[in-house]
Amino acid sequence: MTDISKDTAYCGLICSLDSCFKSCGGCRNGKGCGDKDCLHKICCSEKSINGCWECNEFPCNKGYFKEENKSRGQFIGCVRYIKEEGLLNYIEAVKANSKLGIRYGLGGDYGNKQEEIVIKLLRNCKKDH
Image (tube, rainbow, N blue to C red; front, side):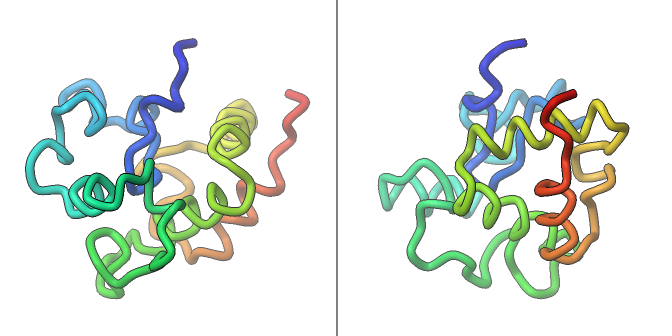
């Protein structure tokens, strides 16, 4: 498997593991939803940070973190996990959960969940699989 840490978007989504990746290629590759007007990409680039997990203002009420966004909990939960545990641990947890049948991506098992549930899913993975 390639180094998927390079495919993790500024918002915390692991683009290469999401269903839209085949059509967009991910925001770090200069394509997809983050090409021109993705708030997260613009904001992180302006602050010279790698992702929202490095931001002192996280969680803000912008972009995917807006209160009215039904996927808000998923994004905030994933970014908070990265902030607390590190990007590589996040990726390992997602991969371990995948082996247990827990589907990743906007249409997966993390979707439309509260932040605490997403973090619990990530922390309860069996990393020895």
